[in-house]
Amino acid sequence: MLGLVSMTGHGRAQQSSDSLAIDVEIRSVNNRFLKVTYKLHESLSFLEPQIENFVRDKVRRGTVHVSIRVTGSASLSAQKVCVQTLSSYIHQVRSVLAREVPYSVELGSVLQLPGVLLPSEGADPEKIAGLVLTTLEKALDDLNRMRKIEGDQMAKELLEAIANVAQKVDEIEFRAPNVLSDYRKRLESRVRASLSELVPNVGEIDLLREVIQFSDRSDIREEIVRLKSHLDQFAETVAAKDSQGRRLDFLTQEIGRETNTIGAKANDASISHLVVAIKTTVEQIRELVQNVE
Image (cartoon, rainbow, N blue to C red; front, side, top):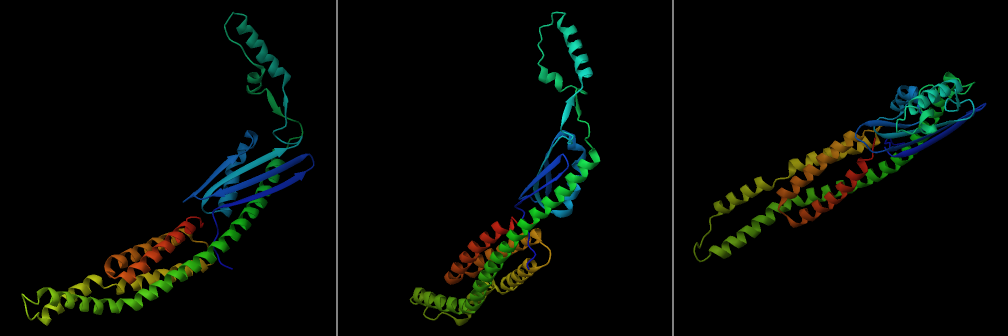
C-alpha cells in the first residue's frame, strides 16, 4: 500500500455514558502548515491544549476544524440559575434605575453575568474530559481512514502522470541527437542559397563553427539527466511509507524548471510539442500534490 495521505477529509464519532452524550466532528482542508480551530462550548475551553495535542499526534499538515457537542443532564453545559446571585444583580440594577438613569436591562444580559449560571449537579469535569478525548480519538481515526483512501487514489494518479512524463522525456532524448544534424543541413542549405552569388565557396570551417555554437546553445543532455533523476525520486517518494507532500512539491518545481530549460534550449519543433505536453501534465501533478500531507 502506498504511503500518501490527503490533507482533505472528514471524520466523526459519537459516544454516550449514563446521562452524557458526546458528538465529535472533524473536517480538514489544505494548508502548508498545521492549524487547529475549535467549535465547542466555553465550558470545555480548558480542553483545548489536550485537543490540539491529540490532533498533532494524528495530523501533520492542514487546517483541522474540530467541533464538539456535549449534551445530557450530566454535561458541563447543562446549567442551573443561582437564584441568590441573580437576585443580588437585579437588586443592584433596580437601585441604579431608581436614580432615573435612562438605561434598560434585559434579563438575558443579566444571565450572562459571572456566577448567575452554574453547572448542574452531577457534572463531573474529569469524566466529561475523558469521554470527550476518547471520542475525539475515534473521530481522528475516522478522519485518517478517509484521508488515506484519498491518498491512495492520488498516489495512483501521480504515478500514472509521472510515467507519462517519463515516456515523453524518452522521446525527447531519442530526438535530441537528430536536432544538431538537421540544423547543420538547414544552415548549409540557407547559407549556400543566400551567398552563392556573393561568396561562391562557403568555407566548411565557417559552417562547422556555427554548428558548434548551436550545439553548445542547444545541448540538453544535462537537463535530461537531471529531469530523469527528479522523476525517479518523485516516484520513490510517492511509494514511500510516509506521506511527504513538501518533498513532492519541491520535486514538482524541479521537474517544471528542467522542462522549461529544455524547451528554451532545444530549438526544435518536435521537442517543443513534447515540452508543452509535459508542462500540461506537470500542472496536473502540481494540483494533486497541493493536497498531499
